[in-house]
Length: 408
Image: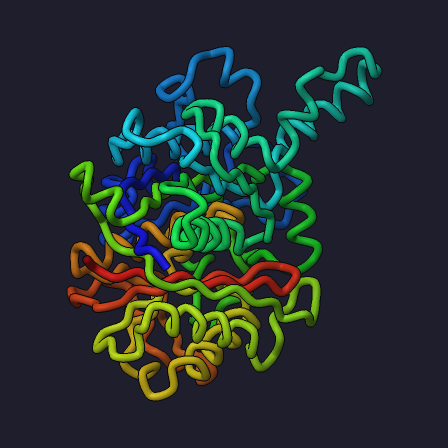
């Protein structure tokens, strides 16, 4: 297998719309959760979310492109533009060797709701001809490919909350196997709307604690549900020798990937967390990471009672004695759950933790839980030079994904 480097990154998130701001806020323990402003929450039990702030699509695309793309695709295009600018790859790669692996858990839900309202109130003739391309979950990958003339493999992945991590992992394998020389990989989501909020609330997934300071509290005994987030994360993955030959800056090497399914339940994690543990082991095996002295894990850490307990069990089962010294944190305590974008944003956090020797904290942590007994880096960043970083994601439907990174 060929080696694969990370040469560019971009992010749109509740704690910053570029990697520098995103990382500074994560390491400072800044919470991006607040009262919902996208719509009136009167009548809703849940009134908070982690919204993207001050996003201007016209900083990344022209007005016509923005008009013809759902908000999730606008986020994706913006993060991809940052990542490609960061990588300086444009014009230095054969178009047929550049791929796009970008997915979304939900896709263009904002557009769908708007056009349903038009249909109901004004009739079928008023529905936009752009409804279908704006709504479908593959379109972010499509418009990114069009923007950068990426004629290589293009694979939009939809695995709910594991989408971003699976996209990065599958892109890594595509480059390692020689099917592409570089891939723009990540995920995007913009689903903070009345229907999604009501649906997640009624399936008992969201916290109804409307105080942002104690709403998303992964691994804390008081946890009772996640907080919705939104945004996009994008990485440029590049074959290592290709990156060296053009003098690219290399953030890290992606060196392992695990992909499994619980095959158990539509929303709940398998109680023994066997599938998640296997995904971690597969990533560790591929990374040859068992000799690592210091391991950082950016956990899925949703702040739901079952997930955090089962994820803790998965880490302990997979790592054995190494689990007791591993540093585990959930940046969802600050960003909320960015759904299909979560894994990509969290991979960026894991890479920057390796680069800077700083482990971002799990904020809001106050009450330990006997079932969650690892080192969750509570409330303040920790200065530790990790040898290996893992980013773990678990999605509705039983989808498990883990990617591993190391410094070059």
